Image (tube, rainbow, N blue to C red; front, side, top):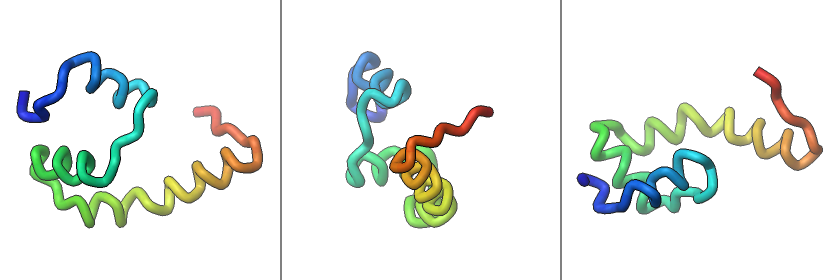
Length: 62
């Protein structure tokens, strides 16, 4: 219980029903031994593309 959150609460994050706020993100990254700034730097381009696709109604099929 390092997150100090219930399993159903964490499941909502995992299913995309809730978004992490920056404080939770930093906490989780640090618990995983990751540098939060490096993680954000690596995912920012992908997030920008996802937001752009969503804005224009595109969905990526993988």
